[in-house]
Image (cartoon, rainbow, N blue to C red; front, side, top):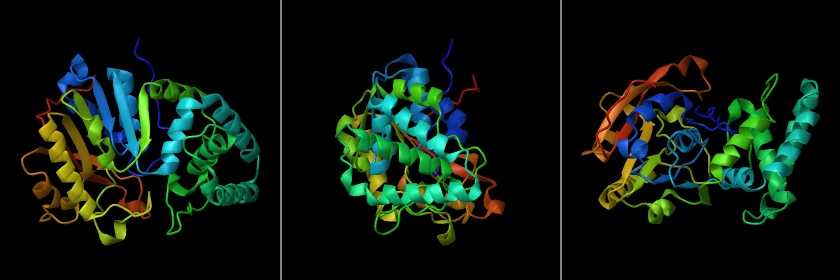
Length: 312
């Protein structure tokens, strides 16, 4: 019997849960047959694709990277210090959920202020309550902030306002335990996408989900990490994909389709010329204007010819 799906334990802008069926149908045959033994993901985010790959295909080794320090810390704690994390999350949920609206708002901003004050005190590599508490606060803030965003200001402080959810899932023990089991077979590291280069070889499948290129100036959402991710980075990433291809590894990349806003915009078609470019329909989840959350095309780019399969 196939194990139950593992949900991302943090919400993340550009999360891929809704596109998983499209991805799975296009995964390389070697992932199913076992010929591909290594999975690499340089933009981990909410982890929906990793959890699907690890649960369904069981690659021998997974290498997970993200430039966001807080995200890497949280994944590391879920992997290594789960029991302590569950205790902290249980305490946060027990304190927050019984409060009225104003009480919840005050607690949220108190946790957010502490989270920002203590940033420099936490060592990513050292075990201990400070690291575990920070991961718990990260999950708490992510689950109770507006729209489940992660955004920092120019000083690196988390600055998303409070959200107004009736029953946010702060303490989700069963799902966190399932996530921790899958992460036990993964190496988790902080770094720019190029940091994954040494882990890639001919037996590797790389899934690449960079911060999406904004369709318009007003749709730009910043910033998941200090510095952002502009067109120069998109070009650098395309060059990196060509290096992956030269190594004989297989990759799949997803991004926004600029043709949604401008049919003449060939930015990605030119960048990934020679690779397979497909357009699939998706619904954008993060947009301040609810009327603009309708279906749009998104890109799936591969260096192999997928054989789309029916669901199941």
